[in-house]
Image (cartoon, rainbow, N blue to C red; front, side, top):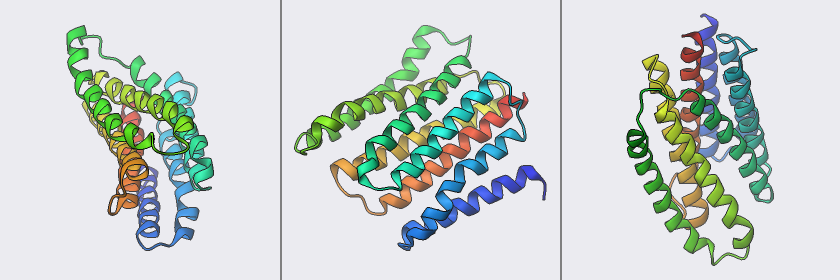
Length: 225
């Protein structure tokens, strides 16, 4: 089995074990294998990239903050805002990468048309979350971070679609990853602040796992192009 395939197999084995841990209420599986997801992806990426490029360094930062966010959120609710901050920095890193890969052929009205559904979805989600959040005693501490995080994840999604389409496989995987990130964060926010969802843990980790893989896998093709 070549290294290219080995990293992907290891990643999805680890992701599957995290999912089993969530569904079977076996937290030790989560504590062992969730912190391994990002290091596996990092090693997968570095097999195909020049580590001295700006894109690789920015991807490295995004993966580091993602890993830090994963570990921080495992420490409990007291570390939620710290974890949110780590993921904010990870999404910011991804947004910077995507904005630098913007398609030169996209006109302003096309960019606006792409952004509209993302902005509409952000408004819809905040309309669901903020009124419920207002009744919580910690509303003052959470309101601004949630709004800023929502803006950042939206910017990441928009800039992922604004990217140059060459090579096509890189564009497709990165777009899939960005959309799955929005889905994962939406599920987490709704379940935590609005109403508990059945199998929310499964949905969050599955969409998160696909999102991270999609962006790294797509970036591999971009860096090889």
